[in-house]
Image (cartoon, rainbow, N blue to C red; front, top):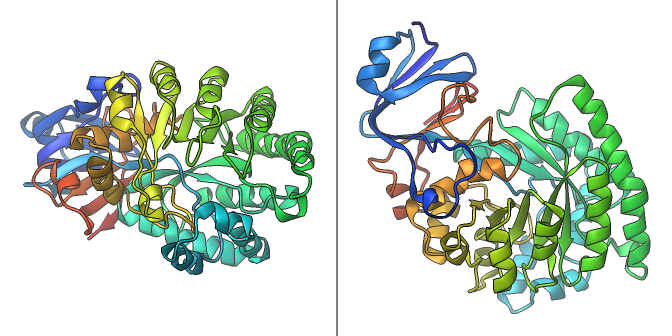
Amino acid sequence: MDADLLILHAAQVLTLASAGPKRGPAMADLGIIPDGAVAIQGEVIAAIGPTEEIASRYQSPTVIEAQGKVVLPGFVDPHTHALFAGDRAEEFELRLRGATYLEIMQAGGGIQRTVNATRMASWDALLRETRARLEQMLLHGTTTAEVKTGYALETAGELRLLRAILALDRDSHQALDLVPTFLAAHAVPREYRDNPEAYVRLVVEEMLPAAAALWAEETARESRPAPLFCDVFCEQGAFDLVQSRHILEKARSLGMGLKIHVDEFASLGGTALAVELGAVSADHLVCTPEDELLALAHSGAIAVSLPGTPFGLGQAHYSPARRLIDAGGALALATDLNPGTCYCESMPFIIALACRSMRLAPAEAIAAATINAAYAIGWGKRVGSLEAGKQADILILDLPDYRHLAYRFGTNPVETVIKRGQIAVVR
């Protein structure tokens, strides 16, 4: 049979094949095929198996010889704030001098500073700055990424950001598939500081219905594998548990998928709320109480850990990921790419950091960055593993063994990125 592209003689092909997210001990099973091969037809994987088998069944004018290298699914980054203008390098220096994240936020910096810059940025400038970050993500092996709104905090501005994510997703100048999340409940903007309840009403009564209507227009034009997600920052200085419930219940009534930022600095009960409401994921989880962590592990939600954020803040406490996996939970990893606490586009670094900071085995970290991350954004049936019929999003790493992905850090091991069956990056 003819194939459009063949990858042959890989030292290891990591299939990550799974009927659903990998949980507990299953996260250590990468489905390794030694001397493996992949056949690609069009945008999808036609077959995968030992090189001898695939080479006997398929022929192609384009063959990549991957001797001594690792082949695996493209990374999926399920939590990013990649769409923004400006930076906050000055605040980074303030934190080094002892200021806390919440102190900076309460003084009008933090998210509000990025909101100011993003509101003022032109459409072209906003897309240009974001496109550069997406290119860095692709170079480091990310082929699918969730991107949130949340840096406008006004109706017209948040809808503009949602349109920007959709425009970038269709942009022929960048290759990533982008999955939008509506995060108008990212912070209370300065004009509502004295009346946060009025802002919650604005989100519930005006912003969410407008976002749902915009999304309905988009899905009428082209089918998408996941709903529009709604997220809320349930945290001290942001939205309390009652406000978060109000926002998420409204989003659910509009057919949106649910996500939630929880337990980054303090526990307000947001993890239990995520489980109760059937959220697809609960994210951050740095100070989650034991009972809520166990409830999350036994639920259908994915726990998304963002180890780059405490690292970026210079903090010593990370998600209790080891405890969650040992309890049978499904863990995903994400960069949390944002201008304030984690300006990082590299999933390989996040994998290496997770193994050190949270005691994950390299195989568990890889599963968390691929198949489980795909399920954390509703794309698990399309990407995140190498299986016949799935989208051909594939990485070739210049590494002799998958464990080197966590063992080595500070450099980029990604040699080739194949996106939807096309070679997008060769280094």
